Structures are given as structure tokens and as C-alpha cells.
Image (cartoon, rainbow, N blue to C red):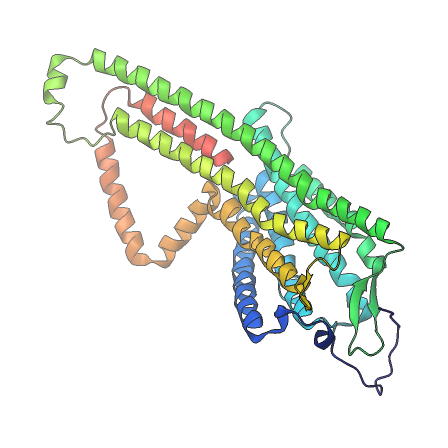
Length: 397
């Protein structure tokens, strides 16, 4: 299709979708995608903005890991604002309504924000790896984390720079409207750049996350099993040291102290929770971004592969893959903030502050629990320390 830079508005024109019909133009498709993208837009903005607010509002949250999480939230907010609403609109209507300057700038900003998001996920994984596997190595300070976050934006801008140059506004004779498309010197350069994007945006971050979290999982499982063995040993020692009188009166005691089995169940439950979170971080990233990257790469090598029976399925398949990728912006605040013990503690306090009746119940419950907890059996410190150690491991995740 030949293109021109200008078109005579007096000439008759045909809408692109009349010549190349595709399912994205149907009312059903537009309604479904409208609902999906509206939910992604609202939930993604609420989750990431609240995550940014909590991090900036509370100084004790401004740790190295949370600075990377803040960087992640900033990039995801940009994605929600500039990619979630605009990409499905252009896929459905095909035409470009935002002018030449935005045609150069918008794809560049979209690409930068996506790269920063995935780079930040990699930085979070590497930071957690160092905390768990190499706790005595050189500790990164918050100021250094800010510098690293800035470098991530610079690298992302460098990798995304070709979009500024190769995006062009095109007018095709006989077709209505303008089109914002990529114009590369030759197909080989474009395909080479597509492979670079695939590696930088998906393959390398996914490999880093998979490696780091699998090693972290293995190490934390070893620690949990070790603590369970110590709990068994100390429980046996405690049982053998108790006299006949203690055994006779054990059923008459009013003290509510968790048994050995209960303590083991708690440790195993926390281990399962940690495993679920680590696996979710890798799987959600992989499953959300894999379809988009695969479809994009396939279309780069064969633009007509999804033209079936006079219908063009390229746009609807691309939109489906893009919507799946955008769900990652909703999942990130849940995985990296709301399941983070530090963030969760603030959220719980905020909730009880908003609900006075609940706060009153919590105060009474805390008083009762404190009174009962003063009647503990000997060697209680061993059990408490085991739980405390596992909780510290859990906070690293």
C-alpha cells in the first residue's frame, strides 16, 4: 500500500475497515474490550497510586526493596494512563487521531514505561536474592537504590529510542484518516529490533526472576525444615523434662499454648504461603506477557498470517494479547505491596482506624490475649523464636 504525507480532503475515501474487515469493529467486541480495559484502568490506577502514596507517606517503608517497588508503581501508572486506554482504541478504529508529534512520542513513552516495569521486577528479584542468599554481602543503601532506579529509566529510554525516529504519520490514497505506523529502512532491521525488545522486555527479566525466586524458595524451604526439626527436638526435650505432676495437671491448665503439632502446622502454612507468593510472581509475569510477545514476534515475520477467509484477525488477537499483558499492572500491587507484611500492617491499621467498632473489639481482644500469654510453659522462648525467625524470612519475600 503506497502512502503519502498529505491527502486531499475533497477526494472520496473509504474506511480502512470496509476493505479489511476484522472482528474488533463489532459492537460485541468493543463492549467486551471496553469492560475489560475499564476494569484494568481503574484497578491498576487505584492499586499503583495507593502503593506510591503509602511508600512516599511513610519513611520506614522507603527501603531499598520498596524503592524498586515504587519505581514499578510509577511505570505501571504511566502504562495505565497511556497504553491501557489508547492501544485498544487505535486497534479498533485503525486511524490515528492524535497528530504527528504524539505519534512519535507516545509509543516511545509506552515502551519506556513497559521496560522500566519489567526492569524493576528484575531489580526486586535480585535484591531479594541478595537478602536471602547473600545477607552478609555489601548492602545497597536507599540512595544507591534511587540511583539504580534512575539508571533503569535511562536504559529503558535508550532501548526505546528507535520508536521516536521510525514512527511516522501516513496517509494512504483512497483511505480515510491518518495512520501512525513504523517505517524502518528494511525488514531485517525491524525484525532485529523486535528480537532485542523480546530479550530485554521478557526473556531476560523472566530468566532473572525464575532463577532468583527458585533459589530463594529452595533456601527458605531448607530453613523451614531446619526449624521444624529443631522444634521436634526441643519438644521432645521439654516432654522428657516434665515431671509426673506436670503431666497429671496438663489437662487442667487454662493456658492456651499452641502444641508442637500446631506450631509445625503454622510453620508449614507460612512456608506454603511463601511458596505461593514466589511462584505467583514468576507465573503471573510469564503468563501475562508471553502471549503479547509471541503474537508480536509472529506478526513481525508474517503480517498476513492472521488473515483468514477475507477477515483480518491481526487486530483482535493483538488486542487480546495486549489486554492479558495489562493485567500485570493490576497484579503487581497485590503481589509486591498488599502481600508485603510492611504494607499490610499499615493497611490493617488504616482499616481499624476507619472502623471504630472493629478497633474497639481489637483492643479488648488484645488485652485478653496479653493476659493469657503471661501464663506460658517453660522453654516458650524456643517456640517463639522459631516463629519469629520464620516471620523474618517471610518479610524478605
